Length: 302
Ligand SMILES: [Zn+2]
Image: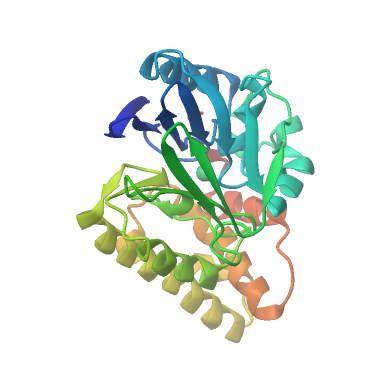
């Protein structure tokens, strides 16, 4: 993992290879004040991130942190931030983390089973419904919700309009299988158009390598094609009376077969079925089906 300077004073913490629990995070320095975008899943990884932030900002004060969504790879490290750091998140993200059971002990869906270390649940101090603008030194950061469910129900992006840098969180997986089972498949497609409308020069995805303007269209097109495959597979599966797992077993992933975390097809189909039927997704049941599709626990190196 390493810190990349996107534009002067604005950095991305990129954790290879971006698979399960290995997220990207962000650092925005304004004078001697610092805003972070997300933390990491484990104590060890968050401490490494915070040490790199300290070095890159000459010991700047971490005044603000924005959580792009509730998932633990972006939020479990919140508790390692200084006590005075003010955390911002969507109101549904806050509620989701409040009741998230995985921080108290990860179920054996992954191998090895992640050990978070000494982290505790630390919820946002300020919640956002639609948008909020914060200022860190001379920099402006717009914290904006896409308008509906996408990766989750409580997604936020952090947009620096002067620097034209967009921290997209998990609305963008670059070169890995997207995950939308706690959000919406059609909402995730719509969110890509919404992200493109910012016209970013630089985009920091939630997982995978950084993007510059010229990369964005082809990467987004590929994600759209994948999400449409999920919708088409779900439609055909429902017509044929198949379960999401059965539909996944019959699906040819084609150009997406090489993407890491291919088993996400199964929870993504659970979401497409649920949205079509007006029901909810049981996250643990959906991930248990992913393990069944894979024939064993999912891989992680967190
Ligand atoms: Zn993530």
